[in-house]
Image 1 (cartoon, one colour):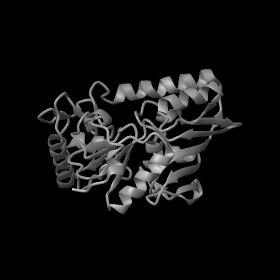
Image 2 (image 1 turned 45 degrees about the vertical axis):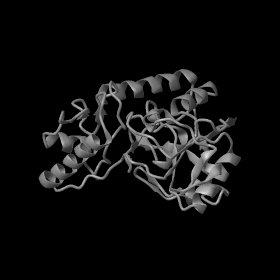
Image 3 (image 1 turned 90 degrees about the horizontal axis):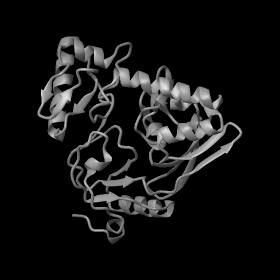
Length: 289
């Protein structure tokens, strides 16, 4: 057991299920809630010196918590919030919720990111996973990112220097803020576009139960949900976990699902799709166990 008075001074005694959109998770030795960037920097330095793995958690929209061991799990909820506008450039802290960010931009008649409306993530998480939908991704608007590395150093990196792809980026650190080049749009149009995107998500996706969004990445030229459905797995249950009847690429928590039950469904999907379709589905959700 590692012992660090500095780390334990930031520990909050709460279950991880509170910080996952799937509502699954147990206790963590180091569930930390820094209140300043100085606190965050100190935590990262200490965790690195102890050889502990670090996991930033924002909206918890794509993290499935199992046994997290001695990972240092850092919440962004209590860090300072930032929102600045300079012409068509918007600078925001990483802990801004996507929905709030879009609404605040609308007050300045700046739009563009409405395509990710409805995703229960924070700006930092959306950048880390290069969130996208409807043919667009967040890197289409990104200018630069500021992050703190494991040595406690603040780095500012231009988007051109960041390697990114489908649901992946090369950023290795805790994102603190980012700048975006937004589009001039009327407030009314931004609100209308946001409502339209959310309406499409509600129509296609199972928002009536907790989930982590798309479980698997779409293989090139194909849709994971369609492959899963064609294999007859839609609606399959393991305990309280179910492959959604509405969209087969969503695994939902019907009220009492456990980590093990979700993993069992993930394994069944991967094995079945591999056997019947010859395709290896890659996880989009992040499994911490």
